[in-house]
Length: 552
Image (cartoon, rainbow, N blue to C red; front, side, top):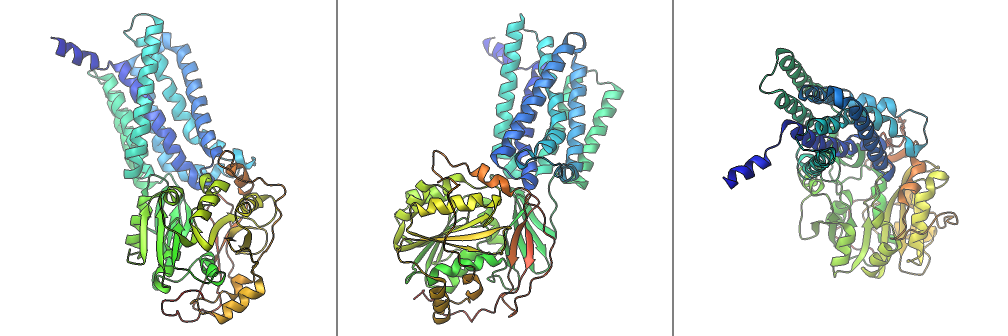
């Protein structure tokens, strides 16, 4: 008898089920919003703050309106209609998501508020509708007294939100694409509507539910709620950290992370440097006499690690936090672990804290233009890197910023921070001018200054398998840092430093090592937030690769 009562106590009434599902759906959509908004607007603290604020505002307004109407209109049938309307809007979200994101990106707003129109238009209405459920359920609750009914509804809604948060984060996003996840929440809403009207489902209710289901399936079949890329998508997935796509365009295979070009490979020549900035990875070999072990923090398409492991007599370790990036690099970018190449699925800072190895070169390649892990930028991190470097070791950081102007704040702050730890710091902008670009910042433990002329002479004299004459000529010895902070663990305002880059051009030079001319092809250059531009460029022809060698 007691067991039977226990099971009865666990059964949810229809209003209780509605509240629970509304919590699941609202929190799931909130997390999904981050994945849909990030490719267009980035995933900075401003984006996430906007998402949280819009969801809270929409839910609050829904609670308010629902509470006013609950005493006269609260029925299971009306809650069912709310869920059907929510599901229908989700279908539109899937079908028109890309169009709406692009349409709202042009509003003349300060960059930190740029994502608010898109978040509001895409997610405000369904969240507002879901806000009706709690006051309706409280009105229909079998609990005695307003306080008990309200508390019960709040508890169930919160439990639903917890389930939605964990299920979306740990199961749906790693398993399904954005549009499939949206479909899950749409179908969940339709099924809940049907349950709320059982057992007497009317003809109109059945037709409406079937129509919305058809809309959802059709939307998934014909539209994608993300940013389209140029080329043929050969693989895409949602990882625990980002949206990932592998795209082929001609002979070039590109890795997109959150809609941004991150790495590229020439399928006919897998070890060629497609993006010009990756050629700069070899510069440290001209600045130190001996490199035996190298650590790359951040893998991507593994262009640098592959070249170092194959071209030089060195051991290369790679710390890559995203397990899916590692799997994709092996399947689509011809990366193979070997005696010379070791890949570790871990956070870069954690790896440095736990390892007892000493490195001659650490390459920090984990920054994106609008998503920078602040813990890899601070003075404390630089001190940790310094402690893991050999006596003449070098830290190389691939920083995406502008060399001058308001958009240069992040680069200059990072330069200033590295200068607190390392006696000499050098910069090599890769694209020229004041546009947002890859700036290679090199910090050395050696106190002697290496001049541009010395690097040019070493480039001619030493055979490191690649001609870096044009890269060396971008040498920049000093940088103005008086108006930017030193980044520290307790205060690293990375998002505010990155903020001026929103709306700026981001230029990646594309290298063609098979040619000998230095011609630049015309290219459409878009704003930061729509993915970087590619400027085709032919670099000077590289000499034949030497047998396994060290810088000397």
